[in-house]
Image (spheres, one colour):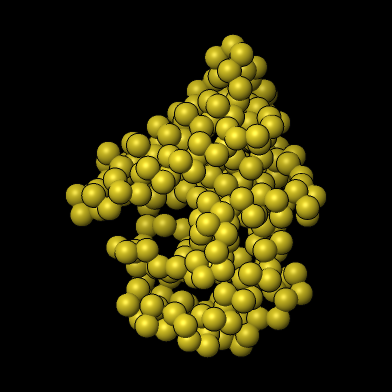
Length: 260
């Protein structure tokens, strides 16, 4: 069983976890995320899934809501735009100042898919993979303090130990970065079905302590599978068939965590 680390909550909240990547390492992970989300295709850097009230943009398919729309999922594309701007890339005027997604729905988005704005946006996103990758890594780095703050005090040491064990394992940082950007931190109360979440917090809870000799990333992958299957089982009736159709792709994605 993994040793539990004594880690005061105050210390966790004071600084992010000690996971630091070079820009080259972050880019490698970013390219994997782009492949997971969009097959590495430039055209799929702007996407809008059927049944969703938001578009998905960038290598991480970061969520961007139109004006007046606020679904249960955490919006992340404005933060990606901040990271792109901070990298020195010039944002067109219509992307500055945290605007809402200008397309009100999926139909309007695809009518304009080959228009000037979306074509230019895809070019910008394709040219700023490094900045988006660093944004994805930073989101993972900042997730642990949020997770520990949201968890029961009796669970914090175990969650810390599991996170650290995965981060220290081969492919572990990729698994953590990808999952946070795939399904979130797991601390947003609105990202629940029947009170059950599917983010990183829930994966760490479901993975438990690795059995003797079991690699931490293997335990993490099994926890991710359990969280995703549970999500689909508890999905609202109006979404269950849709999410059941997505589940095989989700499971294939977390299997990549075990690849060298």
